[in-house]
Image (cartoon, rainbow, N blue to C red; front, side):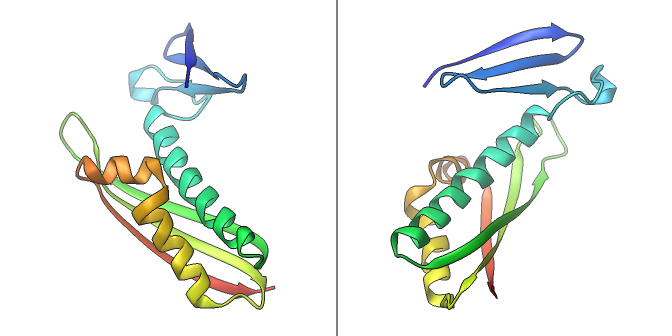
Length: 139
């Protein structure tokens, strides 16, 4: 994997992935940010939630379950001191579909947390308390 960060002035950066996609990153206003993009730690949090949601959806689709929507709401706490690392992250999945069984969604969330989501497993290994829950909604 490769990427490139290019300074745009103040504390704004353009991040480009090795696959050619880009996103704007901006620091907080108290550090000179102008709210032109996501904060770096927000990006890390969103990447973790995206990784886990990708896993859950992929597993359910591979099992030929009729998923019509999958949303992950993520909430995190950070340490008060510097470095202000994540101390807790909670991922709440809302999986919508036809005739979905709770056990199937539970298993997909569990497998993502314990085996497949590289981002959350890496953060857990670094001491972050990551919890998960889910709800199943009939389409």
